[in-house]
Image: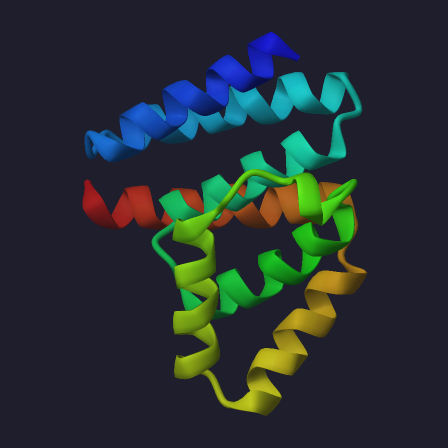
Length: 131
């Protein structure tokens, strides 16, 4: 568990420093460690942070938010997530109610492997745009 938490922490430090590639590497490490531990809350957090690296595309946010809300063990004990909450609020504002609902429905039915692939692709698109 400590290795997953340390990787998440390092990802936050990298993200705060503007080092998006390093942040993505750290969040990927956090995901690997948390999946090995079968820690749903930690794996969901890593996936959410990969989407943050991905640049807050509104459809990505809606889909992944719905997916991760289903995966969390106990939302009341999850750590605060102001960056994700802001991204979700922006996505709700930018998308029509129908579009947001459609992306959220897709996220709620998405399996773990698909969500991981989706989050990785979003981050890769963003990193490619920046390079």
